[in-house]
Image (cartoon, rainbow, N blue to C red):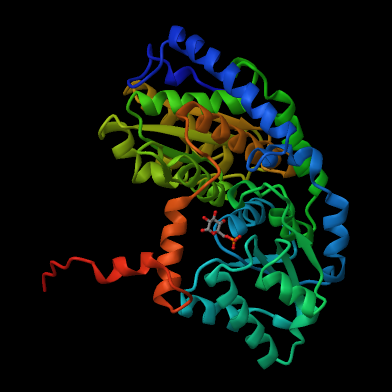
Length: 430
Ligand SMILES: O=P(O)(O)OC[C@H]1O[C@H](O)[C@H](O)[C@@H](O)[C@@H]1O
């Protein structure tokens, strides 16, 4: 993986950072790296996620899901960090085992999905670190019921990943369900490369060791200089551009298979860095599709954005047939991949020509190894950015506030946050 900061330099873009200020920022990176290394070594909460390339036991994950090797489909029931890592991997890589996700409680979507699934050959992969998240548990109860209605013994088809205690752990124990623990100190949004993200990948038959090897490669590159570490280079430039006015970070992968990666990144960035009045707003986009919509704003709107391009350097291409139309003859003999690459380069150049900061992140291919590098590097970038902002990267009190309010409303306990619902001011126009 490599990160190209050229189009984020002050000589090219506004906002941008001068070479001199980048060198100065690198001194702060050295200090932050020391803190991060200490956290990794001591397996401190959050930092433990960056130790996963050493600590994750891929054989144990493969062995735990072995009873489900006959699966036609895998349905992951989870939300936020307990779904997005698995979804990112599943959507990026091909598999004969179809992956589905229930990460919302929209009744119409749940009903439609359950009606379509081959329940007798589907593995239900329930994931919740806390084991108490209302959406996940509610969806699981619905799925379990649907399986019973279809004459399927749900205890034969359910796999659980959860913490050491809580309702979901109790349920797994009571029914003797195959399960894995969520590792200590690894928050949901940093758990893609742990049991949380990898159980689904294992059921789909992906190469867990290659995923972890990619992550290990980026782990080894963490160093006291951003100039030696693509992950830190990315985290540092995002921070530097944000404090200079680029408060929005548009994540723009040029691969359909990485569309969910942008969603995963949005959770990582927003939930980790959005605190104390600080943080950079992640925007989700997809190349080339969003060139035809959002790009107008990114090139000509307010100078409050940076664009992150992510692209694989290699991909399987598909030839564009020759055509009898003279006006289209330039397309014949090329491939859809050539077209996508040209679109990518053109968009990058169009932003640079307008002096809009952008960063290029490249992986070799969208395969297990490339994905492992990308996921780990973005997590390390986020941890570094958190150190530079001086925020507590691994907590999410604002999210907890909303969860408490919703639980209080549903009668799930006495949560003062629920009172805010009654206090809502109305100015309704009809
Ligand atoms: O894994 P769970 O305990 O079910 O939590 C699922 C999600 O819940 C909350 O919204 C947290 O803020 C997320 O970070 C977490 O990933």
